View 1 (tube, one colour):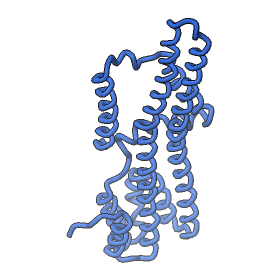
View 2 (spheres, one colour):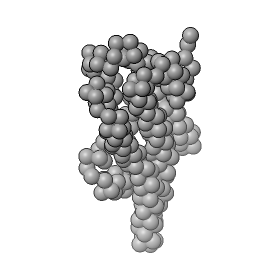
View 3 (cartoon, one colour):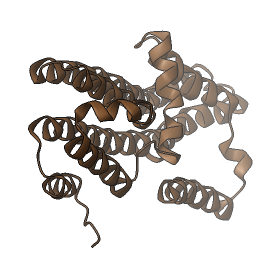
View 4 (cartoon, helix red, strand yellow):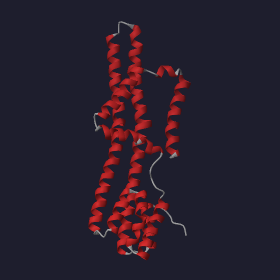
Length: 252
């Protein structure tokens, strides 16, 4: 669990709610038409921007913000270095016994290790790796794009709601009782759009971008390891290279 994200998002929402309560009735800030316009309209417009499956995957990606699937860098380095030691001592074919462990670590790692064990050329292995990374990049980028779109659409729908509310007010200037509801829709929709964009969509998008860069960096360690095994590089040299890549310090 990424506790910082949880504290940040919950803290922002709590502070806004407390400010509302201290300033008056929270009921004055609840407006069903405004919710329909901003939340419903925002999700509907975002859905129209992406294929259904990719949109749903993007929305579900919020779970990665709270529980990222990023491996521990020290454990990963030790795992890769141990594989290098075994290959250097017993030969590349000895890695066949560990192929399931490579796939358990990451499908991309398993695939390129499989190719290495099968004796395929490094050019073929690199081409396979580059293709897999490009697909991974596209998938993660689409998840981010969904939240970027929501972050843009919620405020835009808020402005649309404001215009609707103003039009309703102008049409009912002769009826004082209708001015209040019209003003509520006009103001609250803008508020809803700003809140959803700034304390939900933008933070989620930024955190997903952070994890995307980190995940792709970690996967770069796989191809470095395979090249090192193929060239017979000293495992200690590989360990230092991976530690530098991932920005960690190895213990003695």
